[in-house]
Amino acid sequence: MPTTRTAEDAPADARPRVIWDAVRGTRDANTSKRWIAVGVPLGAAALAAGLLAGSTGDQQELAPVTAAAESGLAADAPPGAPAPDQPVTPGTQTPAATGLVVPAACPNPAGWSNEQLAQFLVVPGFDAGAGWPNWLGAGVGGVFLPDGSGGLNAGAFRPGSPAFPTNPQPFVAVDYEGGSVSDHAGLIGTMPSPREQAATMSPQQVRSLAADRAGAMQYYGINVDYAPMADLDLGSPIVGARSYGSDPATVVTYAGAFADGLRDNGVLPVLKHFPGHGSANGDSHIQLATTDPWNVLQARDVPVYTQLLAQPGPWMVMMGHLVVPGLSFDSETPTSVDPAAYAALREITGFQGPVITDDLSGMKAITDRLTVPQAVVSAISAGADMALVSGAAHYWGSVAAVTEWAGNDQGKRQQLIDSAVRSLTALPCGRP
Image 1 (cartoon, rainbow, N blue to C red):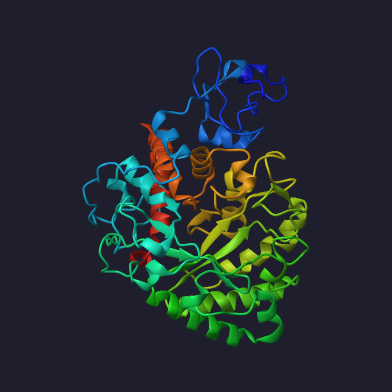
Image 2 (cartoon, rainbow, N blue to C red; image 1 turned 180 degrees about the vertical axis):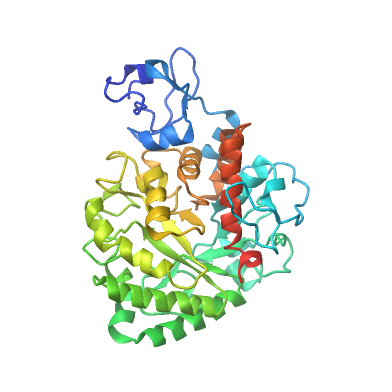
C-alpha cells in the first residue's frame, strides 16, 4: 500500500511538481480528504490546471476533490443529469476578447454558464444501440459512437429525431480509418487500410471512396470522423497498416485525399495523433509511449500536419498521449495534458481550429496517472478545446470538475468560452 504524502515530502528539486502516490486518490490520515490524483510527476498538467493549492514555495498543498467531481468516478452507469438549463438561443455574434468570432449561425457561448460550457466541451462516448441517451441532455457539443449499430439504424442521431439537440446540433463522431479501425462498417461499408489505400489506389480513388463512405455516415447522422491518420509508419506497434506510409509526402497526399472525400459529403475530418505517434515505443492504450526527440519530430512528423492544415478546411486535430523528449515537461506528462504540446501545434502549424484529446477514460497512458475528471481538467487547462471521454460513466463527474475548476476565475472562464467558439466551427452551425 503506497504511503500518502504531501508536496512537502517531495525532494527539494521536485517541489511543487510532484504529487506523490496519488495516482488513484489515496487519503490523508490527518484530514481524510481525497486528494487530486495528478500522477508522478505530471507537473505541467498540475500547474496548468491549478491543481496545486497556493502559489509559492514549499507550503503548497494538494487540492481536495469535491464530492461533485468525484461522483462520476465509481458509477458503472452515468450519474443523473442536473436539472436542464434554460435553452441557449443565438445572440449577437460579438467577437470574444481574444479576437475569435462566433459563427453567425451558432449560439454565442459568452452567455452560457460555466456548467453549460463544461457540458459542451466534454465529449462522451456511449453505445449507440439505445439511441440518444436521456441522461445526456441537450447541452453537449459532441458525442462519440463506438462500434455498434442499433441506434444508428433507428435514426436516433439524425436532426429532427426525438431528444436530439438542435441548438446547436452537436457533432456525432465515429472512428473510421479503413482496415482494422472501421467502426460501424456494417452500415457504412468497408474500406482498405490506409497502407493498402496508398499501395493500390490513386489519391482520386481514395477521395471518391471516402466520399461514398461519408455519404453513408451522413445518412445515419454521423458528421465527424476521427480520421485520417497523419502518423508516419516508423515502427510504432499501434500504427503499422493504419498509416499511409513512412514517406511524409505520401501521407500528406493520401490523408489529404481521404479528408477531402469526407468533406465532399459533409463529414469533418480529424487529423491524429499530434505531434506524431509513428516513432512511439508503445501503444498508449496500454502504456505511456515515448517518441523520438522533439527536434526529429519537428523536422519529420510535424510538417505533415503543417502541410495538411494549410489545405482548405475545416479541420479538427486530435492530440495524442505521448512523451516527446525535448518538448514534454517531463517523462510522465503525456502531450494531451501538456501545455507545451498545444502551444507547439498552434505556433508551428498556425492552426486556430478546434483541438480534441484522444480518449481520456480508456487509455492507460492517462488512466494509470490521473482519474478521468482530473485528466479532463488538466487537458482543457493545458489547451484542449474538447475532451474525449469514451466512458459515459465519467461524463457528469468531468463536467462538475471543469465547472469547479473555472469557478469565479474570469481568465479560466474566458478560456472555456474561447474553446467553445473554436469548437462551434466543428458543428453544423459553424461550417461553411
